[in-house]
Image (tube, rainbow, N blue to C red; front, side, top):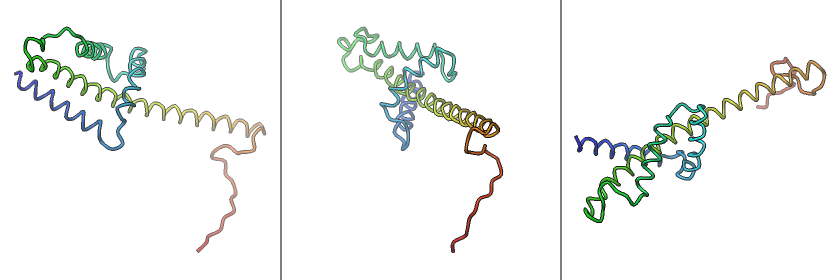
Amino acid sequence: MATRRRGFVLTRLVGAIRTATRPGSPGLWVRIQSLPRLVSATLRGEYAGTSVLRLAGLAAATAYVVSPVDLLPEALLGVFGLVDDTFVMAWLASTLVEETEGFLTWERATTWERAQAGERAQAGQRAWAWDEGQAGVPPMGTPQTVRSHVVR
């Protein structure tokens, strides 16, 4: 059972490293900068890709790794005392990569949707302004005559 758990954690860590280092993937600094936005969006209920409980687990794992209190103390067990820290850090790293990957994808899509909604609203305002004679640009979809020629 413990061997399968170790294999699972290491497999997740390798997958997270591949995800984080693939071309075009957000870098470490971008991921770190996204963490406050991830927590904020989750707490406000805007982002449903993770839970408050999962974020609490990440915070607890971070506290465990940096804390001098240890389940298996290195002072008594030497190298074997590092095993628990290693697994907690592997879980923490892989989970952070997974969570930030999902959040950054969601954030990009949300930003794009908001931009599209803003463009649609502006197009509607331009159409209204055109009807009222307040703008020099016709609204989108208005038939226009355009002179052109073909160059061969």
